[in-house]
Image (tube, rainbow, N blue to C red; front, side):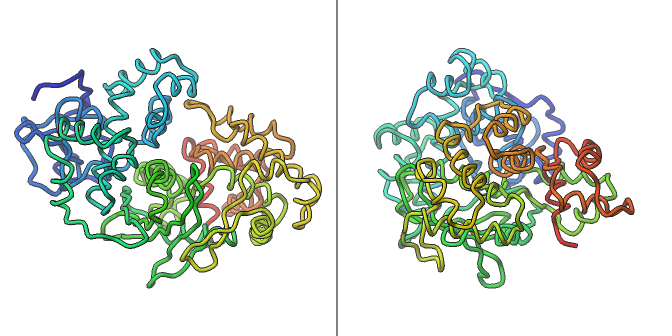
Length: 492
């Protein structure tokens, strides 16, 4: 097969082929296999007959496989693969593009947003993925459109716009050029039935996945009126209201362990923002983590090993909205989890916008940053807060409006924490907690947390460690200190 642009093959062919033969889930999303005899590329977990090694090409991304002329498998569906998470600039840019950063803007705008020139941005992506920003964006749009074709009954025009195409004609043309079939053929093959007031999408992860532990964590911190966690036929389901880019609706997440996927029911009113919404869900539920690698690293510590055995595949719960989590973190200062949950419910009742959803108890949106930024401090304090903490709520809202909760791509943990601490009322604990759950730094670690200090002292004979002692103990857990924190927070 002739490459349409410079391909970016994976260097270690032998390792990739061994993973392919074993259908090793640890490598799902880490590489893709192009099969020359069929012209199709697959995930390493694809259930089809394993091709000969001589027929295989291995690529670091779906975009690189498509740039080399391969089209995606309709069976294993590469668009379902978890992302290969790495803490570097290229992957940070990739995640923004996957969330639709180039759908409404151009490369110059994205480059400025991440602090690079357009030439530098192009060079970074070519070096890491073998494709240009436009090629990467096109692949993400096509794969997302393919996902919608196979999982929903959305009309073609809605599929095209939801996937970031400017017109149905452009969508049809590029789809036919790249995949050598019409979009309608993919839908017919999928046999998708028409749905009612909700769309159903599936989101894959690398197993294992400790869904119950994550759902219980979210349940204890669910914001009344905005979020809910309920029993759904023996498994826990997470639901919430959504207000995103001018669209309002709701969503509900359940676990499909036999498929190694989460299932998202999403209001049809949110179809215009499905691409950024799905990116938020992947982040909130930590679907791109590699639990085997994390467990291997942390399992060497006898303090963490028992919790890893009890909760295989434990994830770090993220946040659907960074501002919402930041406010929740401020409300949690010097009070219990239950106390912070009560305060957050009062804040929503006082400042949140009413909405309609089919989810019991979910009837409001969380207050937008501009609402709390303009609110009187005394009005915020009236929910039961000290004046300084009410002022901190307004300060973090103004910080969010200035873009502070959307750090540039490639920003380091130390830089993000330092920026958060410039907000009056935000200390080290709050900054680390926001960095961990909202900004998704896996090495963030709130060493000032009393619960962590007590849990880490279990094998020392002391009641608790000091903040300095805990930070020293946690040094060996890098770069996964955030996962260590979640393990220590789990009940025995």
